[in-house]
Amino acid sequence: MWYDPHPHAMPRYPSRYASSISFGPGPLSTAMKALIGANVAVFLLTSLVPSLRLTLGLVPIWVVHDLLVWQLVTYLFVHGGVFHILFNMLALWMFGTELERVWGTRFFLKFYFVTGIGAGILTVLFSLLPFEVAQQLYISDVIGASGAIYGLLLAYGMQFPDRPIYMYFLFPIPARIFVLIMGALAFYASFTETGGGIANATHLSGLLVAYLYLKNPRVRPMAELKYRYARWKIDRARRRFDVHPGGRSDRIH
Image (cartoon, rainbow, N blue to C red; front, side, top):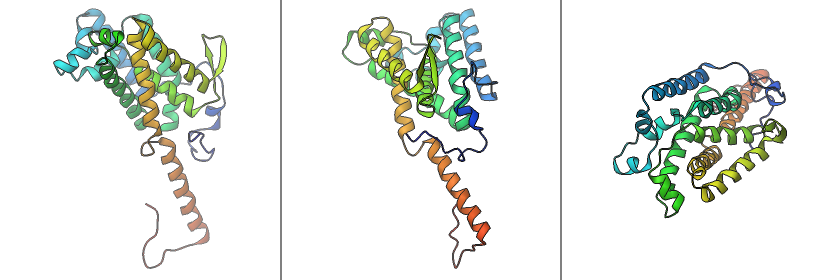
């Protein structure tokens, strides 16, 4: 799988990140603090002014007919209760911190918002289908960062496929298997559960958007890292053997 990094491709990240097992991935980065802080701030705001949930949450019928397109972004920061935001932010910290170390902050933030917004777009499109659960979704208020969180979960499974994840804090399961289980549950629930299908449609959308995005060779982070590593090796070999270009420069830029 293309997400298995060469140990020398990322000299800034020690190998312990790919093999250690611990409760937490480490301290919060600046980007992680900003994301969690924004989620907490919006949660407190909507707790004080509950009517804002409808304005900031994702209501497909309003996006389609009233063009409230900002809801495709703002719904990621709205949560329905303490446990909702607690578990989402815990998952963001657990899976996102390590991915940010490997990818870098810029790509991590781009991936987070592409996945979250993409999940919102697919949710709106799904709500237009002629199914009972889709019709209910069409007039529902979809909230939470779960679409982006599921995208991070899939990316984590691709980056660290053999890393054990403790399902229900009891059963160790390889990350790649854990992602498959969560995806299958989301897919099944999207078509069978009346209430749960609404949320799980967004979860499944997050998984799908993340997979398509990471499989695109133009945006794959490891492809860029491998290219930079190959360029570094060529430049080092030139310096070692004192190789100079001829009539035109053939240096890799």
